[in-house]
Amino acid sequence: MGNNWGWRGAWQVKRGNMEEDSGGAEARKNDGMTVYEELQGEDAKKLILDMLAILGDDVETSNTNLDALSSAVDSLYNGYDVPYLAGAERLVPFARLETFRTCYEATNSDVEFSALKVDVDKTDFGYMVGEVEAVLDDVSEDKSKVEAAKENIRKLVDSISISENNQGDGPSSMTAFGKLEYYMINNHR
Image 1 (cartoon, rainbow, N blue to C red):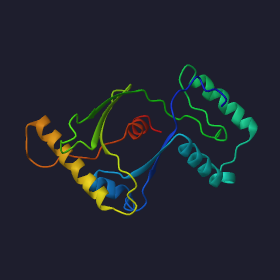
Image 2: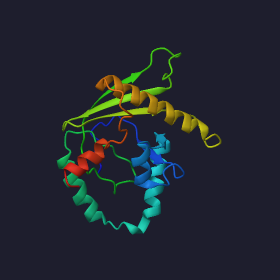
Image 3: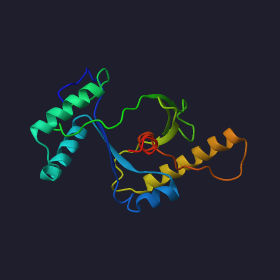
């Protein structure tokens, strides 16, 4: 897949935190939050290539298969920005999502939720989902920062839900399908 179609973005990888995610899907369902490390740019590219190197021979491809696949993908995604990463030719797009994102953050640093960011995404297929995020520096030594951030997120989500519904009858649901997850479920992937 040699086409790059002028892609201007940066590679990004979200790597789950094994300690936080040890409960798997059940833990996410109970708490509605995920904790992950976000890598961007060269760090993300390196992680992708390292993961592919570990897979190594487990994923068999021939140059003929790659050429045919590349041609099919090129025609399917012609006119769209598809990132290319030398060494990761086995990675091919399996979903195309267009997202319109609106971002919110507190304008006053004295506000209780000033360390949080809220992103609301609407997709080209009509799905809308919001995300509340706390970006923390290295927390490997101090897990209490993560718990404090999670509690602050709960408070903000509950306050938004109460003001939206004009009800105070308990905490809101914090579990939602991600954009890709929703797309795959609804497109039988």
